[in-house]
Length: 130
Image (tube, rainbow, N blue to C red; front, side, top):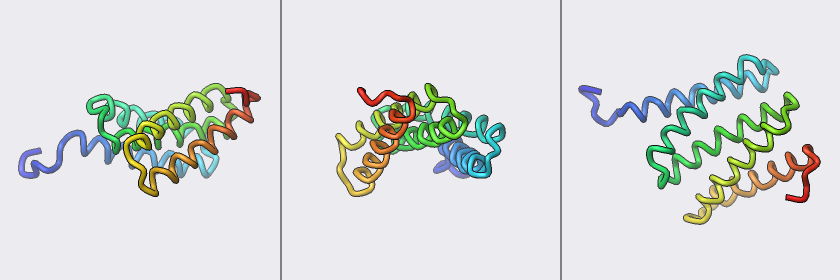
């Protein structure tokens, strides 16, 4: 990016993803699910590409986990049960990888929240055996 080498295309992409995610969450909170879904999916796609380019990055894994979490909330609110459980399980898997490599308070807290969310989603889906 020319005069600003500290700004890379991946940084801009993640900033765009964060903006899309925040706007999508705002729409979700307002019940405007048709506006929220494409924004949250687009943010997830950007985060996924960034993570796949550097899967050893705990930060990128946590960012991707957040995208799955936001989508799982939308799916819960719209009654899309299989999508909800798949998204919350993906979020949990990423956070477990992160927690296996670091155990700071924020990581443990986020893992606990993800476990609670997955438990609630499995209860909603009637699938408590997993």
